[in-house]
Structure formats: C-alpha cells, structure tokens
Length: 392
Image 1: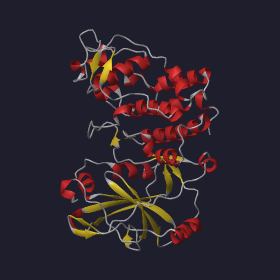
Image 2: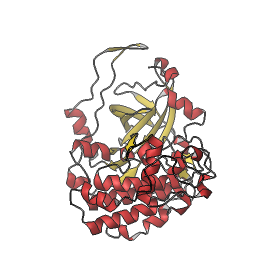
Image 3: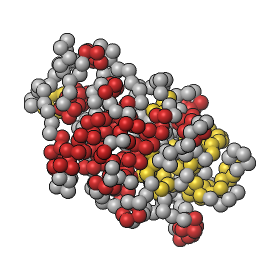
Image 4: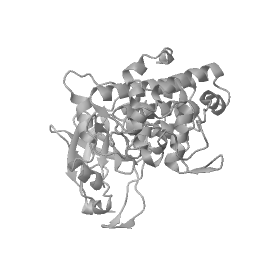
C-alpha cells in the first residue's frame, strides 16, 4: 500500500548497499520484523563488518516526521549527543541516520541505525511459554527500564509508550554466530503477490534466535521505540500511551508531563511481576451499572490507588465534567471500592509470591500510581527505593 494512504513500507534487496552519513555504508542482510509504522532489518557496516539493526520508517511516518508530528529522530539525537550527558546503557543509542527514496509509491524512508538486539520481552515470553517472570528477573527488567526512564527525563524526553513490546534485550550472538546463522538459514522472500506498484516479492521476517532462560536472566534490557516520544513541555499530541497503561490525566484531558511515564511504569510493574494487565479496559457492567471504557478505567484507578480525584485536578481537565459531578465523585459507578491489590499479586502469581512480597510490590507500585501526577515519585526517586536493593 502506498504512502498516500498511510503505508509505504521500505522494500530492500538482500545485499543492497545503503549510504549512511560520514561515508558509512550498510549492506542489507535480512528482514528482522515489522510494525505499524516501520520495518527492521539486519545490516552490516561495510567499514568494520559490525552488525546493526536498521529501522526504516514507512513513507507515511517519514512524512509525519518531516511535518514535526513524529519526534523519534530528534529524541534519539538528544539522548545520544546531549553535551555533558553520558547515555545510559539502557537507552536506545543512535549509531547513524539517513533518508532515502523508496520504491514506487512508498515515498521516502528515514532510516535509523542502532545496536542490534535479541528481541523484545513480549516475544521472548510468548515464544518461551513464559507466563510471568520470576521476581528477581522481573526486578532486573524493571530496574533497567527505570534507569532508561530517568535518562530520558533528564534529557527532556517523555517516552509516552512504555509497554513490554518496547523493552528489548541485548543479543547473546557474536559476529561469527550471526555469520553462521545467515549461511545455515538464508534470508527468504514470500511468493510473488500483486501490490499497488505491481508484483512484489516481500521479504520474510526472520528474527534472531532467542537466548536460553539462563542467558536471558543476564541480559541487559533497553527501553526502545521512541516513535511516540515528545519533548517535555511541548505537547505534540495527546493521543498517547496504550489504554491499559494510560494515566488518569489523559482520560480526563488534563495537563501532563513526564509523570505519564511514571504511571505507565507503575502499571508495568504489576504486568511484569504477574503476567497480567492491572486494568481491564473493556466496557461492561460493575454491580449492575454499565460503564464505558473511560468510566471503567477511572473506577478501577480509584479502587487500586485508594485515592479520590480532587477539585484542583478536575478543574483543569476539560473532559472531567463528562465523568465527575460537582462533589468530585464519578457520575456513574457502583460506589467507592478499595481493591486489595496485593491479593491480586498473590493470586496471579499462583502463590509464587508471598503476601509479604506482594505488599512490597504494591507499596512500590503506589509510589507511581497516584491520581494527581504531581504526587507521583520521579524516576530518580524511584531508583533509590529499597525494593531494588536486591536487583541487578
């Protein structure tokens, strides 16, 4: 599908040479995967034979970037090259970037060259049939993610799309392993099919093989995909965060800043520890009262945080009047519930986490899950929390 209707994916040939900056060139070796707005390719730097990942934005997303709607490249540049700033090993690092014309109706493609990763934790869990992470591993993943968040916020960047799919781990493969892999499992293409520009042979996505669980527990985890990143203090769009990880200020149309990431991180703590999402986003009935998605989310937020929305927050949130009355109570709902969230942690861990450990998890979560963003701890403050004392 062409760039003009929201697509325009890159079509590279295996062995094709792509010209980067500073006289660098990259050889395309295979397609690793694709997402809504881009595809990712394994490339090799022709100057030193090092392997990298190349993310090629589709034509539609590249056009958005040119219009300032997408801020991914500026965010990566800020993280990588801010004067006096030593980038965290848990933040995605930009190696090179360039733009090139696509084929046919695909438009242009911004290409972002980054270190090569082994995959994301969602794929690892799904492929390995891992229902949830053991608590020590969960803490490691979360600690590394929080270090990345602290780094982003110090650079003036809000991620706005924190989720397991965007947490990557370093590859355990050496250069020789990759060379052998390419020989034993050559890059492939799909059968010919008709497209907007004629007949194409699309590349097959062939991600790198996953590490063993023993190797995985020692991996370095990196917060990636800055496709939804925004500069602190400059709101490009309010359409941010996956629904189940979206903070209350977004649902009620209020002002927001980097603390949206802290709320999402608090939800992520529960999800990484238990393997289950904290919030149910489906509309439905609660004690006979039908609630839409926003209403049911606001109800659950109150129940999990054990807080109430205050007038000072609701008064600066244009959508609050749709859901709250003049006494700051939900217009629709079964009353004031208080969830025993620690019991949910024990239950969803099938007893692997004791009640005492669950209370520690929930205590830490609630430092992130405050209804008023001003009350949430910062990433820097959370890094000092005793919950991470035994994490590496």
